[in-house]
Length: 123
Image 1: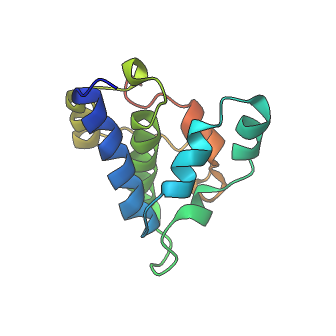
Image 2: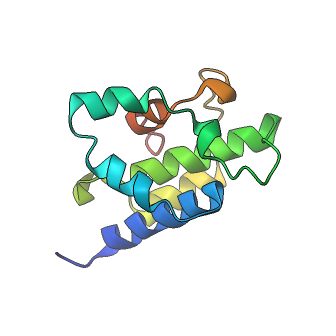
Image 3: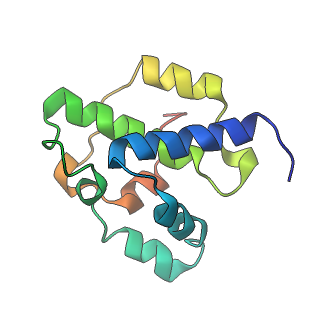
């Protein structure tokens, strides 16, 4: 294993999900790393982002929902199994500093599959 900036990007993705979920996303990370099969990928379209959010907090609304969605999309891009496909921290910081509206569908209907297939860093 080569230790480089892409490891930091991966760690950022894990930490971001931990903040969003209110717990370590260990099982989710394992699930994502095994999602290369088509059956695992289709299952991701059944899991709503809302189900992963920290249940101790009220659901986000309006602009807060948009910010959570941008953070979740960034986290999933940072967790890409292939290090070369992960963004740089500069790209992540740029996206977090200037998020663009990205709610193609209702926040409450957004699935993990929607997050994984999006490339929010270059968009």
